[in-house]
Length: 402
Image (cartoon, rainbow, N blue to C red; front, side, top):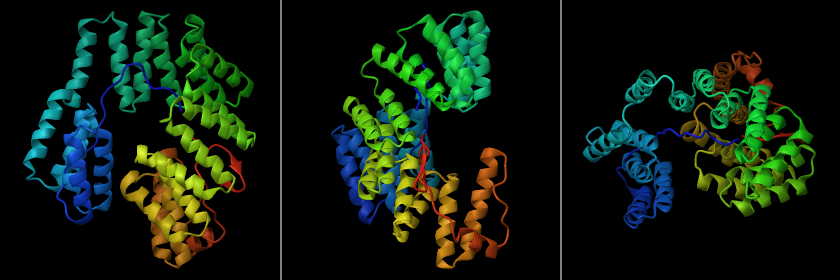
C-alpha cells in the first residue's frame, strides 16, 4: 500500500518458447505485436502462451524480450534463464541473456560498485542510501536500515534519506518507528505528499483512525491526485462496514488512476462481502489481467469459487497459485487440502497440509495447529471454511489487504 523507495534498483523474470497448438497462436500474435512495438499487448499474449504449458521456452523468450525492451532488466534475465533451462541449445536466448547482463551487470558487480563508491567517498550520504536501496530491493531490510542510518549521521536533516528509512521500518512492520520518522519528514518538508501518505499508512496500521484521516487529508491538500489516499479511506470505511462508502472511495481512486490495482482489488473484496460474487470475480480477473502475479486476487477467485460450491474451479485456481504464481503461498495449500479431504483423497490432503505447515513455520517461525495423522486431517477440514484475503472480518470472510 505504501510508496516505494526514492532510488530504484533493477528486478528479474523471463524465458523462451517452442510452440504448438493453442500456445503457438498466442506466440504468433505476440510476435506480431512486438514488431508493432505494442509491448503491453504482446506481454499479455506471451503470458497466455506460458499458461498453456505447451511451449514455455519460446514464450519465456518472447516475454523476456518484451521486458528487455521495457528496461525491466532483472525480469528479462530471469525469463531468458528459464528459457535456457528448458532448452539449453536455445542460442538466441543465450545471446539475449548476455545482452541483458551487459546492461545490468552481475549482482556481485553491483555490490562492489556500491562498496567502492563508499570507500572512495565515505562522507557522501547518498552513497550509503544507494547501497541501502540495493539491499532493500534484495529484502535485506535490516542491512538497508543500517545504511540509511549511516547516511543520516552525515546529513541528519535530509528528508529524502529519512523517507527511505521510514519505508524500511514499514517493510519490517515497525509502525511506531515509521510514524516517528515520517512525522519528522513532514515537519521538515510539509509539501512532501509521499511522506504524508506513508505517515497515514503507519498510523492506519496501528489503528489510529482519526490521525490517519488527518494525514490523508493533508496528502490530498498537497496533491489532490494522490489516488492511493482514497484506497486507505476505503479501507477505513470497510472496517466500519460502510460498504457503499468504501466503494465510492475506490471508485474515486480509479477515476484518478484507472490502473490503481489496489483500488480494484479492494473493491472486489467489498463485492464479495456483499455476495455480489460475479462482480467480485470480474474485478479480480481484471487485476490479474494487468498483473498476473497479483496472488491475493488469484487466491480470492479460488475462495469465491470454493464458497459457492464451484469446487473444480476452486481447485483450478489453487493449482494455478501453487504451480505458477507463488509456490510459497501457504493458504492455497490449506484450502486445496480442504478440497482433497472433501473428495476423500486424504493422502493428498495430508501432503498439502504438511506443505502449509512447513511454509507457515518458515514465514512465522511458529508451527500451526499440530495435526499429524491423515484421519485427523479429514476431521480438521470437515467444518473448515476458506477465507478471503483482505482487511476485515465479516460474514465468515476474512479480508487481508496487501
